[in-house]
Image (cartoon, rainbow, N blue to C red; front, side, top):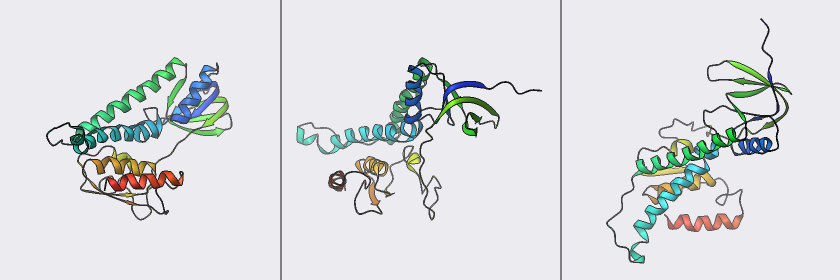
Length: 234
């Protein structure tokens, strides 16, 4: 039997994170026929699901806790000793993430972007194969392709992630309890954010950074300021 004809698009975008969904939205607004290929069930990539958005949600919650524990008294607000409920903090974070991810799905519908769930790969420069979770393949053809495949945590060669004792930022967003001592390898953005989250609610946090300052890819002055503020946290 003959293969059914592949559907043809003006643009196919591989990767549904901020790079991919923003490109898809803009192309859709410009009247192009667009397909977005994303391997996860949820759009939004690392940033919305396990990166910027969830870590900011936890930074927000722990800042409230930190203020209640340390600055309320000075402001003349007397309360009983506050307790950090990590389960509720993580639950709130999940709600923030869901609202963002649902928003992206709505944006795709609104701009008539066809979303395909699966791993996108090139057959040739105009043919994209999409492999679904069930292992079934389908192909679509396109004039142009945008590759926006994103990032994931890098394990250390001598310390593979076991997701219990040696965890990536992803597991750090789903903790069941507050760690007594958290060692953060890498003083970059995500490491410092998650380190701050747990330091504020009572973990002892040690940061190991290869370079001679924090957030080494950023402005030197920012690293110095961050060093000051995190030292204050202990």
